Length: 237
Image 1 (tube, one colour):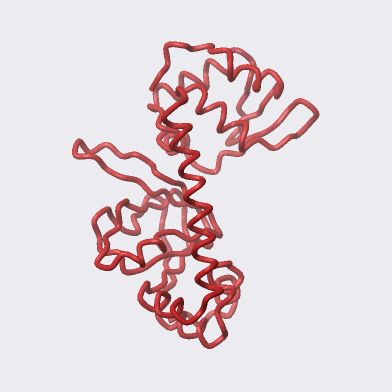
Image 2 (cartoon, rainbow, N blue to C red; image 1 turned 120 degrees about the vertical axis):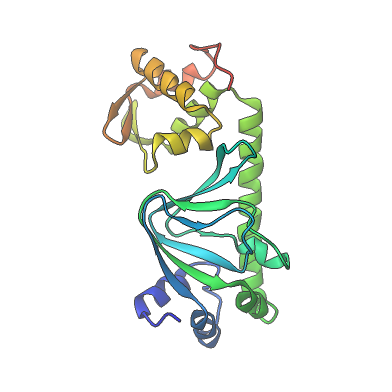
């Protein structure tokens, strides 16, 4: 049970819970739990029973799958303010299809799937919020599948930089990396050595430079132009 009023307020502000009545929220919080994870600590593993879903309040967390050879593939990086695993509540006797591991120290709130699902039966506005959230995620994943299947490693990295860049000047920008490069490489389906080679090549071509956890875009127009001009055409994985 969670009694912390600040956490209750943060939960109520999230769109999946904002349409709950005070009595419904109070009922949900009775079965909720506060979870603190250290960096690299697992929340659950692929194949575990999926009885709860989560809201990440602080930190970053990766969802990944492991193949029979023991190799891990990052499926999604969850950032603060986002929920995950809620879709599984509609599949009875479900298991988690991925593992969840903290990338940094994390603070999460876990919710009982049965409790929230029962509330949805009597709250149409909350149902619409869940459907809207799942629709957005579906479109996002469809776009990601297209990018990962049609683009080579170089293009995937360039597209990531362009989508996450914040302009710092008329023709310059910055991308703040809040996750380790190995996690980003896995998320983009790029081998770590290939990722390092691409970064070094882009630095040598003066497209980017690095400053701590930031990637500095030295010439935004040239970065956009480079998407269609392969500078490492042998890289395809």
